[in-house]
Each structure stands twice: as structure tokens, then as C-alpha cells.
Length: 524
Image 1: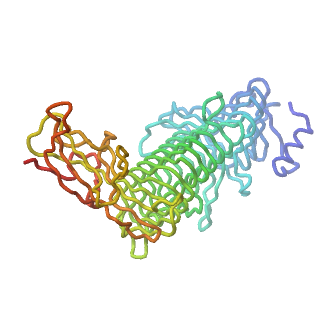
Image 2: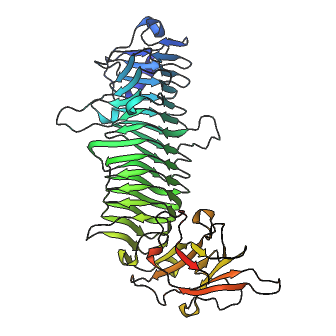
Image 3: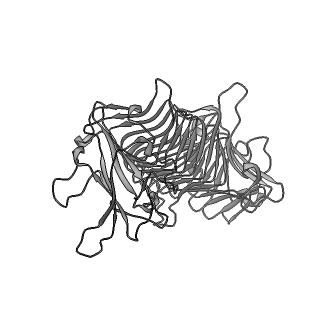
């Protein structure tokens, strides 16, 4: 049992507990069910104004069902102690209402995976915003697991705060995890609750390293924020702000490394859908964001952004001081589709939608953008300043798939090289043609050169923009030659047909790997 001085100190640390508040300790003999007097020292059940302390090596199983008033004033879980919700039976709903903070050096577990109809809820209801918090301290853990596959997007683990009075703003609560604590939340509903993690490790190098946020539903003010975390995972979550307007992002990661933000759906008045600041080697893949002020913001190195969709955001994607790759991006309904500042980025297979008259499809400020198979014409790009390193601020490249019609022998190839008049032909014998990739290209059985998914497709540079946003001269032209194998090893390939080709924005392939040709050549 705790000594009186410990209770006084705890009261002080928990922001001024009234002198009359009673500290109720678990029994120190293994714990028990919350509603069983035998689980508590002295046989006294906790009441609404009490401080609850779960002692080391005790496991208290919460089974309270009264959702009309606070269960207790605040909770402390000692190192090695556990507060776990009982698995609901039938339609039971266990609701723990705390009118103050929960501070845990031990384990707080909400597990309803075995309950097809019942549910568990943790509700933080203090009038003081600083007290609506679950705070994980050294080695503390917060584990919440709902049942998968429930109908109607329902979740049977709920983490919430009290509903606001009519006409009053919504109130947020927080789960705060830092240092050596553990945060693992899956298949839960978070209503106006922010998950905040700092300095957590999810590499798996140690058994207590965990930061996974997966398949949850976030509503109202609920969101995810991470700082200085290693390999965190945020995947398959649904974020819906409803009538709430938030200046903060739905998902944010600051100074993290190897963060994975995957297949989340975000809709509503967020300041940003996904924000990655000063991150390294992180990835944002297959997410969708609608109606946020910004679809995504990124500042950091070695980014991988792939398969994301942004709709009806004021700014689709904003990349500042960023290096990396953006693939299969879709932006619709933005005022500015893509905004670059001091960044070096390759865009591949990206589709940007039309913008308002005063909007911009691609804004390039002191940056370098390579556009490979993107539907962004030169006239839709604003350039301000030279690119880092002195290269062109913007260059466009296109996949080219050639179909050869007519009879040809096995081993026939399509060879494309820069036309000498374009000024880009190599002057050194044997030097690479920097305007062309993967030439000569073999023909497949259906008469096509390789598709992009083969990683061997023909790629041609089509135009470049200078620091003033004007196309650089000379324009690119190419010599295309269809060659068949030579009759003898010491002879050059046989030329079946030659022609000069000029690049075109019409070469953009909306379905990059569709087995349709960019151009066709008919042999004599």
C-alpha cells in the first residue's frame, strides 16, 4: 500500500487534486474485476471523485456499465500494473469515464476482438483540456484492438471525449506516448481524440517497441501526430472531420524516418491531409484526401510518394526542400495542383486536373522537376528561378511504345537516337545518348516494343524549360530505325525502315501499360 506522502505527491503531480479526494488502490494481490470490492484495498469500490491507483503486478479488469456519470477522477497505473477492459458478453457495453488524466507506467488495454455485439469505451471528460489525456510514461503501453469486419463501418472499441453542448465547439482529448512507451491501436473508433507519439521506435529490435495505427476510424477533431519516431506505421485508417475545421493535418510526421503512411482515406476540413516535415526515407502510398486545405505537404529527403489521390483541395501537393519520387499521382479540383520550392523531384505517371483561371497546374520555384509520362503541358507550368545545380527547372520525358506492322524476322528491333540537328547527339564515339533510354528496343510477340512495367520501355526527352519558363532550343527530334539481324555476324543490322519523329504531348499514356502503341510503323 502507498504511504501517505506518496498520495500527496501524486495529488500535486496530477495538477492539484482537492484535499478531500480519496486514493483507491488495487489490492496488491493480483487485482480482480473493477466492480468486485475484493479487487481494491480495504474493499472500497472507486467512486466518481476518487483517484484510482493500479499497483505493480496487479491486473484490474474493468467491467463497469454505468455511462451516466464519471467512474473516477483520474487513474495512475504503476510499473508492471495493468488496467484491462473485460471482453464484453452478449450486448454488454463497458464504459470507463474518467474526469481527469490517466497516467500509466504500465499497460492500458482495450480488447474487444472476441465480442461480435458488445463494445468497450474509454471516455475522457474533464472540463480542463490539459486533463483530458492518457499519458504514457516510461515503459507504459496503450493497446486498443477492436473486432475486424463489423457491419456498417462500426467499431466496438471507442476512445472518446464528452459531446459538446449545443452551439459550443468540440473538445479534444489526447493519448500521449513518448520515449520508451508503446502505442498500438487497431480497428477502433477515435472521436475527438488525438494520438500523439514522440521518440517511439517501431523497428522491432526490442519486444516493447511498437507504433502502429491501423484500420481505425477518426472523427471530429481526432488525428495522428508523430515526432522523431522510427519506422512508424499509419495504414488503412478513415479520417472524417464532419463539421469540424482543423488547422492541423489529419496525419503528421515530423523528423521521423522510414515512416509508412499507407491507404488512409481522409475527408474534411483539415489544414492538410498528410504532412511530412523533415522526414527521411519515408513513404506515403495509396492514400486519398478530399476537401482539405492542402492534400499533402512534404519537406524532407528521399521521399517515396506513390498512388495517392487528392480531390477538391485548395493545394493538391506542396513540396518544399524535398527530394524524392512521386508516382501515379492524381489531383482533381485544386486551385494549385503542385507547388514546388527548393526541391528536386521526379514525377512519373502523374495526372493533374484543370485548375481555375487564376490557379496553377505546376508551380516551380528554384526547383528541378522531371516529368515522365505526365499530362502537364509546358504552358500550364510557372517557373520562378533557376534549378539547383544549374540544370533545367523542368524537363518532360515520355514513354514510347512502337508497333511494327508487316513481316519481320525474329530479333528485329526499334532503334531511336537524337537527330543531329537537335544538337543533342553525342560527339564522342560510344557515349550515351542522354535524350533516349532503353534503345534499341526488341519487339515482343505482338509487334510492340516493351511496355513501361517491363522497366525497358523506350523513353524520350521531349522538351525543357529554362528559368524564365520558356522552352529551351533547339527542339528535340529523333531518328527512328527498324533493324533486323544481319545475315552474317560481321555485318551491320539490316535497316528495314527509317524516319524522323518529333515528340508530342499527345504521347502521354493515361494507362501507361495498356497494350496500345504510341505510334505505328508499317514496313514496306
